[in-house]
View 1 (cartoon, helix red, strand yellow):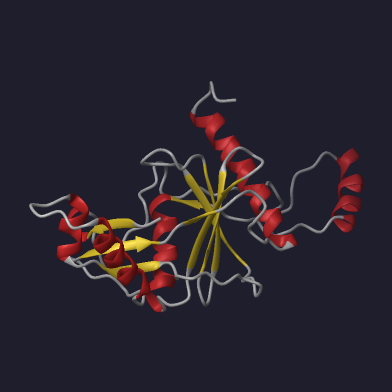
View 2: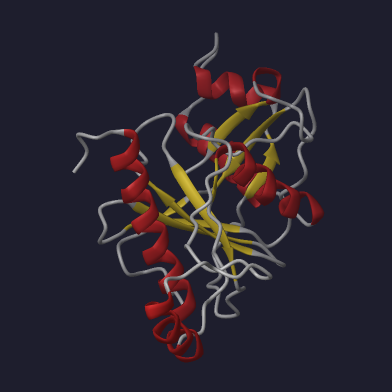
Length: 230
């Protein structure tokens, strides 16, 4: 699946490149209530000994932050701009009813959770995760590729529509080219986005944990924003 990106019609504040625009707050952080370093909580005296015992028995994990919208888009693009080679964008439906995606580059990996892929502005949460050395190889790497103007006219059905075989040959030529860092004022093909069946994305144990937490946060956010949801 390829997406045509016309940099003349999109925000070009960051080298003119975009991931799909995601509706929602610019930054969403999932937080866990915990004690603040350097501050003594004012607990009732009869609870103090119990709490001290619990503090010794439980090790708290650092709070994981989930980003959304422009903040998430910029973080991924910054990594892509540093090295546009060797990326993949793989999506699949998940048991939670949402869609999950793994966006992997040579130096970083991101996990996304989308409420839907069937609307123009899906709600998307994401988090950077540990790199997966078992990342599968795909025939074509994800990224931005130059899109010739004549091919755009053929796709739009210009005055002289090209035969289907010629159009497909043009698209394959674009896919075989190397992904690049896009520039403002030019048109690009973004993709491919690989859509696979549930369970086909090979996640590590820690990534499965992140995936579950993303689904939980997505569900909570939807219920907060849309009280009738669920």
